[in-house]
Image 1 (tube, helix red, strand yellow):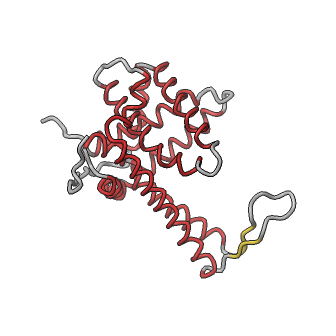
Image 2 (image 1 turned 90 degrees about the vertical axis):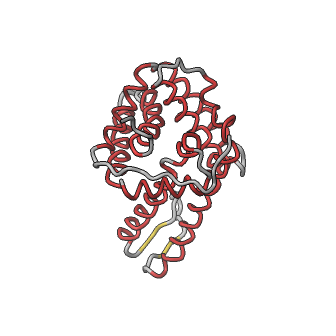
Length: 243
């Protein structure tokens, strides 16, 4: 797949309620072939945990591979919308179509996260935040000082960074953008539509809580809806609409 590294895709601006509509539309797509979607999501999760278990290399590898599989879900959602019966091969479509570009998306996003963590670490003493080593029986270090504002700042920064990734895999495989261009245009679309993205993220988190209640069985449906929401959001903001 050829990518145009000078390309740019302008996104539409939509109302905040569309964030919920993306989830509803994703649910209807998943409902058409629920068992296949559950199989795709379950297979990806098994791959994810197997890779994550690799000593030292597992954590970064999951970042590199995540956009490739996300692209597979996006392409599968597009096929399902067209009435195509999904196969397991759909999960690996990103490997065939844009492997290098999607790997670079994962690496760049990981680099941005590391830079953000370095920035937050540098800001901690400036804000009067002090970190104490964990005591016996504790796993995490203890923070002292104005922790609440610092956590709010951290959450806001992580949300902004997540906007870079939100639509990036879809922009690579459906719009042919390069890695930087995909991250850039995903961020621009996310900033322009941050209320919708925030509502979508909040509702997905709430649905995750509900999915965990019946012995976690709801996760079999929640995970496919999560992945397909990236496609329905992309379609609302970026897809060419028929006159």
